[in-house]
Image 1 (spheres, rainbow, N blue to C red):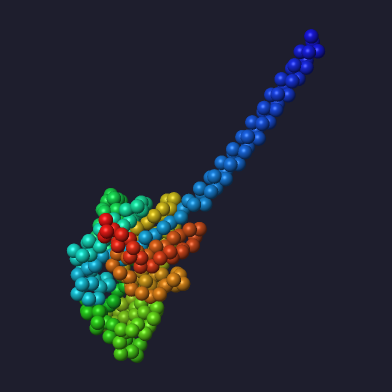
Image 2: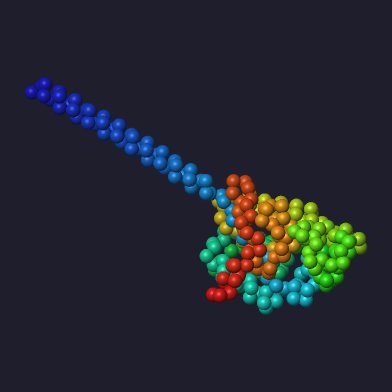
Length: 271
């Protein structure tokens, strides 16, 4: 009887040890799996997707006048295309929103968010997202400024775009050089530095907040100059009002996904 009891105790002890080892193995497996999942989540965490839109059509756009730091209101058509853009972006949940401090950009951002369903999202205005300053050409007819640019580079006209994809950068340099009266015209280097620096600052801030989708509303020439050396996709084509340039920031690097995409407001117009 005693011998049988001892054998039974040994068997129970062996079973307990076996169960314990099994639990340890299962537990460590779950722990390893958990760490893997957490790492996977962390690798996606902090990715920032910028939707950088040009503002809607303005009074000076309609009159074909130079509009840099000078500011005119959105036309009815400009407000409508901003609303179309908002509807086209309705499936995008924005975590943050920024705009140039010029009213045409701020109003565009407000209209986009209102029709996107995020009316309460605060918009951070930034002076450094402004359009290029055209100095003495501000408010003049675009035709007069383009004629002066052409003469500066030894051409009769810029109609066939002899400057190629460097049109915006060389155009800014010409404006800066020709503005001998006020010395306010910005050259390409100045515009590019302030725009790219601002983009980096916004990206780093959003990464700290966990990343996500970010709306930015700016201006045609300054957006063009900003992306000109960020991708091989750059062609130097003008950006339509309410077009979107999509840039992704991940692991400390920028990737330009698209430039001047009109599909968002075109989609919104149909809805």
